[in-house]
Image (cartoon, rainbow, N blue to C red):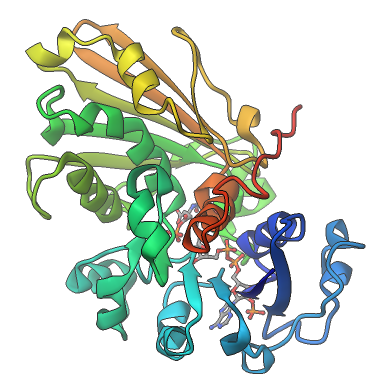
Length: 350
Ligand SMILES: NC(=O)C1=CN([C@@H]2O[C@H](COP(=O)(O)OP(=O)(O)OC[C@H]3O[C@@H](n4cnc5c(N)ncnc54)[C@H](OP(=O)(O)O)[C@@H]3O)[C@@H](O)[C@H]2O)C=CC1
Ligand SMILES: CC(=O)N[C@@H](CCC(=O)OP(=O)(O)O)C(=O)O
């Protein structure tokens, strides 16, 4: 059994980790932290976990995290990097759901997250935790930077088109993405209030969003071009959906002459044939966010609405494949377990 600690157990990704890990056959949860709720039984705050989780929240200082095999950070940006050195030195594997270990360029991290990076050496060895595109490195990793929720959909949607060079005009990619309000976390923010977000739909971050540099870093990696190269460039526009869970991403890429001769449906089916969590839907499909709710699955449909245009529709649950489910998928790989263990829940519908 793996001894697992969760830092930040009261947030939305924290409670999603608890839902998944409390049903995982190889995990014993040994510590769940909250500074504000220390002493409160977890199941008192989240009755969904009654008879599943018997622990009470403890402060991070009382959590004895160095005795864990794996520690998840479901905390704001900047928390994991402040504790990573001590845990790595104690032989603990770390999975950070925030962005401390995603962007490889320290200056870019500091620009977008507005804080100094306090452990660039660990950032150097950290592995980007998107199993479908980085599986072998994740298996060997001590520290994983779990991807952002939007970047997961954008990378999975564009990867089949980018992996073979020359199929698309890669410098002019467009990603229009929409997320449910749980993507903003449990903290109070005006734009996620019921009266602000329900019966409404709007773009945000239109001057630039921190997931833009993450998306471009990773798409360049997939395409095999140097970091910072303008050869691959994606415009990313996030929108707020009046739902609780779910991301829907609509991606556009102009096809080159070579790309126009490719059967896109076949390309996507071949690319994801052996992936347990990626479902390439039949031609003509329009995947719905509710078809992946509370599951680790991603559904993808590829279309060619014009002879030289590829359009890819991608749905995921932002809290599961977009955060906690993906983190558990990484834990399974890092610990030599079956990658799908504890993650094959059928989505909840309606
Ligand atoms: N929501 C989503 O869909 C996604 C979120 N993420 C990322 O995952 C992380 C967690 O997100 P989410 O669950 O939504 O966030 P929440 O705001 O809902 O929860 C944050 C948690 O962190 C704890 N916390 C806050 N500050 C500290 C600190 N300094 N030290 C220790 N614990 C702290 C809080 O508890 P307390 O203050 O009591 O200690 C709380 O349990 C964020 O970095 C977010 O960007 C990534 C992908 C998707
Ligand atoms: C709807 C909403 O507000 N979503 C969040 C994205 C959540 C996430 O995955 O972001 P990080 O892990 O990178 O913080 C946002 O746009 O800030």
